[in-house]
Image (cartoon, rainbow, N blue to C red):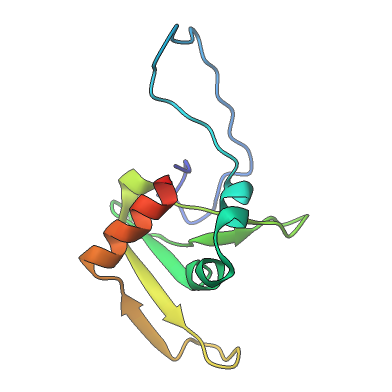
Length: 118
């Protein structure tokens, strides 16, 4: 997940300090969210780039795909435990604002969460 999904500004840095690592198990995995985006099919990359997540506590909106402000590398940005909904923002010919907004249904949201975990 990504810390800070409850606030409109995203954290510029996140540090983790492990006092004592588990000798086995532990259940914590770290993954590169840029690599996660790269592993999506071109169709999924296009679709996920239209999605906006809604924080379940604060209602703050965040694009599901974020570009690094310096390198431009795209990364997936999602907090599974704090996402209350996902909105599909459909654009036509690059027009702003989006021509239509669609809330993902339960089955679509579940499939998105499963794919993100993969």
